[in-house]
Structure formats: structure tokens, C-alpha cells
Image (tube, rainbow, N blue to C red; front, side, top):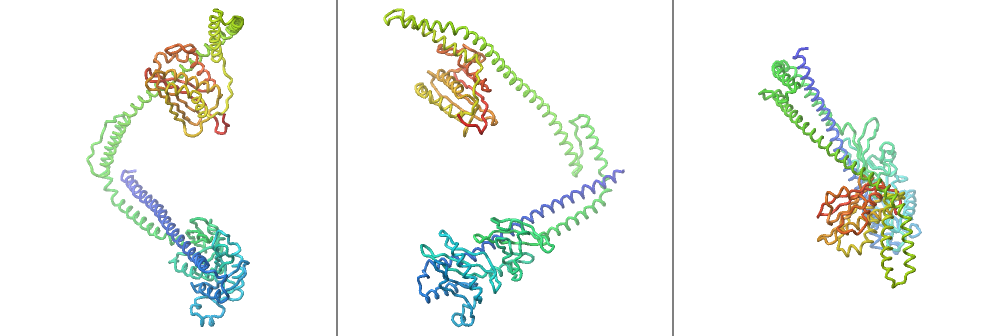
Length: 625
């Protein structure tokens, strides 16, 4: 295939595919944006109609309640009560009838139009109200009495479910207001919904349709009386509209047409306001966009066919130079650059090619640097492995020394018990003034010291079978601090607890871990004596929800670096005066190891020491000790 043919096909693909893709993307974006705009407009309209419907009905409830507040109609005589109801009746249009009910729910007075000519002679404003049949009066009294009986003491009014009047077949609701305070009875009025229906008919502009549904999803009002009488059920068409509590969107089909709808609940009435528009009408601007897109695509293809021969001749030589540059890069010559001084797309391609070569060269240098970084990481991991090996060696060394200590303790216990027993017998036989008693007391004291060392050796040598129970780490640390509170105050140590937020639980033995923290706290106190700054920081941290890290940092004398490797060895101490047995840290190491944890120590001479313990975290469901 010749380059001209290939270039023609390439240009067609380059021109047509992007244009088509842009058109499809533009269509999708425009459809989404238009759908969102239509939906938002429908939501606003639905909310507005819902609020207007609620205001239209609930304002009558407010008026009825206000009439009861300003006057007590049940205390009026028949003529005064009738005059009171006439004022209420004439206050607004579309009130078909009003009634006054006593505490037993029985009607005491009512006003309605049953003879238009007679009422017109009395008051011309009666002409604004419908003529009511006797059956409708009975229905109104029954509905009003039932609704008044359901009004709770904490509410002043109630509105019935919408219904069609028995004779006129017009939508209406009953609004009742309960007498305030301790007065019983109330005021009721039947409100026709024709004004709302007319408003919905006017709000439906063009193909848009605005209507109200009752709580069950049946058509209540839409401006067409005949359709309102049929009470069409929309609960199956509009998903989520029945009993809706918040604004939403829905699609439905009617008479073969797809509709886009938004709905909003009517406050306090349980109705739903719906705004709908046919989908093809809502998305009509997209069809114009599609025609424009395909027109542009056609013009683009015609231009490509006309310019392809000229472009083929102008592109052959620069493409060859670009191919040569690509071969140079393939040979590994990353410093090769193409000199093509053009201001068209090929020039841009040559500059992009040079940028690519520069980027490859830079990437090569970065790869070399990455190799060096990787080597450093390997070295770091090797150092960590060496530290692990050191800790393992320390554990093995402590285990070996523990076995030796076990043998020593076993061999020393019996002779030591004999010495202590004989000394105690001799002390019991000697009088208080005998000069030998003081010497025997010293022997007894030192023998007890040897017994204490033997017990420490047994702690070091015996693998503890500790009960692993979930325990509250913070509570245990607080108990350890409280046990040393007097000594901390005496030395003048300021303690700063930086605990992890919330409850932290670890698996372990309370007595054994409490002894470990007590020993570590005693070492810290000893190291901070006679120091100008005496601060102790105790912090906890949860690591990956499986481990708990505890750090104890003091500002004591610190430990020389050459002693750090031997710090956990039995009988090794850095104290300036021998006040212990040199077994404390060795015992701590054995206990923490028995708990499945680790202990490490970092110290700088003259600065302070940090002891870090890592313990297994307890499951979240475990009980606390």
C-alpha cells in the first residue's frame, strides 16, 4: 500500500474518529448536563408547588385556630354563633361549609349554601361558594367529628385525607381546629381544592405537566376535572412516590411516551407534588447538537480527501528523518536529537521526539539513581536483619545463662535453707546482750540477700507459663505510677503520660507485666537522682491494630554506648553504686519474651534512656483485667 493511500486512511481515521468521539462525548456530557438541569428545574418546581399546596391548606387551619383564640364560640348563643360562623365562612373563597362542634363531637351550628338565591339576598359574597347538597352536609359532619376526635392535645389543628364530594364530585379536604386550653370542641371547614387545580393547569407550560398525588400515589389534582375524578394510580409508575418523605427523581411511561419526573412531599399533608415532561421534549436540544456534530464530521472528511495528496508529498521526507531518529534511539543512542525546523505538526512531532529522547535519558539517569537507592534499602534491611540476629543471639545467651542459673539456684537452695535455719535457731538461743548476736544477724541478713538472688535467678531461668488475658494497659500503667507516687514526688520527677486515645488492651499477665514496668520505673528513678532535669515520659501507641508499643523516656545519666550490648546480661549493671543484683533487665527481657513481645533500649550518656516494649494487642471483644 502506497504512503499516499496509507496517509489518506490515516488522516480519515485521525479526523473522523476524534470528531466522532468528541461528538459522542459532547452528546453524553450535554445529555448529562441537560438532564441535571431539567431535573433541578423540576425539583424546584415540585418543591414550590408542594409548599404552595401546604400553605393553601394549612393557612385555613391557622385562620380557624385564630378565630377560636380570639373568641369562644361555644359560649355564644345560637344567633351569635351563627354570625361567628358566617364571618369564618366568608373569610375566603372555596369554603363549602363550616361547622361548630361541642366536646362530644356533635354539631352545634353550621353555615353552608343550599339556596343560592336566598343567600345572595342576605350577602352577595355567598355567591363565591358552592351549593352543598344534604348528603354532602352529612358527610362533612361525619368527617369533621371523626377528625376532631383524633386531634391530640399537643396539636391545634388537623387536615383530613383528600376526597371527592358526594354530589359535586369535586376534590376537597376537611380542616379542623381544636379549641385551645381546657375548652373542648372545635371548628371545622370543608375547603375545595379547585384553586390548586387551576394553578396546576396554569403551571403546566407546553408539554410540562404539574400534578398532586395523595399519600397512596393516586392522582389528586392536575387541572383536568375528568382525570381528577378517575383518581389514576401512579404508585406503580413512579417508583418511591407513594409516601415520599423527601424530594426525588423518577421516570415513567404513559401512552407510549417516556416522561422525566421530579416529586416533592407536601409538608404535613402527606401529599406529593410531581412535575413531569416528555423525555423527547426535555432532550430536544440534543438532536440539534447531533445534527451539528455530523455536519462538522462530513465537512472534515471532505477536507481530508482534498488535502491528503498535498500532505503526503510534504510529509514523506520529515517522516523518514523521524524514522531515522527512532532507529538511533533503538540502538541506545539516547543523546540523538532530530533537527527539523518546521512550525507545523511535524515540527511539533520532532520536538516531541527530542523531548522523549531527553526524558528517556533522564529516566536512565533516574534508574541508575534508583538502583543506588535500592542498594541502600538492601543495606538497611541487612542492618535490620543483623539487629534481629543480635536479639536472637541475646535471647539464646540469656537462655543458656538461665539454664546455668537454674542449676545454681537448685544447688544453692538446700544449703542456703540449712544456713538460714541454723542461724535463726542460734539467734533464738542467744541473749540480746551477747556480742555474737550482731555477727549472726549480719550472716542472717546476707543469707537472705543470697536467697533473694536465687529467687531472681529462678525468675530468669524458668520459662513463665503466664495466663494470657486481655488487660487495660493504661489502667495498669496508672497503678504502677500510683505505687511509686511518693518516691516520684520525693525525687522531684515530672511525669508526662502521652497515651494513645481511647482504650488500649494487650494480652498478658497483670502481675508479671506490672513487675516489669515497676522495675523499669525503678531504674529510671535511680538514673535521674541528682540530675538537674528530671522528666519521665510514658507513651503508648497502637501499631497496625495488632501490636502495642510502650516507650519510657527519662532524662537520667544515660548509658555508655559500649555497654548497650551487655545491658540485658545477668549481673551486669551501670549503676554508680551497687544497690541491686544486676538481674532486673534480664528478668524484664525474659518476661516480655514470654509474652510474645520484644524489648529494646536506646541510651545516650548524659542525655537519657528510652526503653521500648512491643506487646501483642488483645482482641477488641476481650474482657478487661
